Image (cartoon, rainbow, N blue to C red; front, side, top):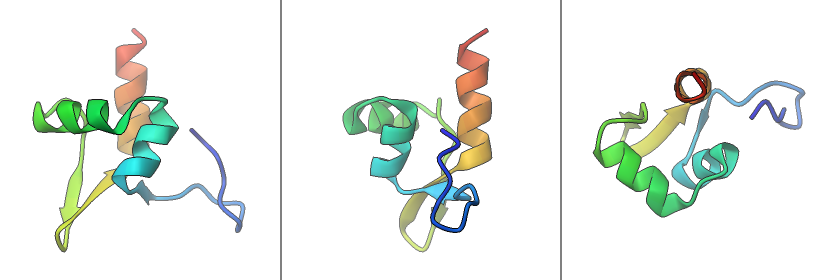
Length: 64
């Protein structure tokens, strides 16, 4: 999940396909979890963005 970009920095947020890949789940699973309100998402200008830190927190909460 901490895959750095070409500038050796963590991406701040991911588009849906990227978020699903980072979490190791399918895009349809991500959509389902998003619709249920289980995964944090931001909507900016009609785009869904999944903040990196929020995904890490969500994933850690599921590991407990």
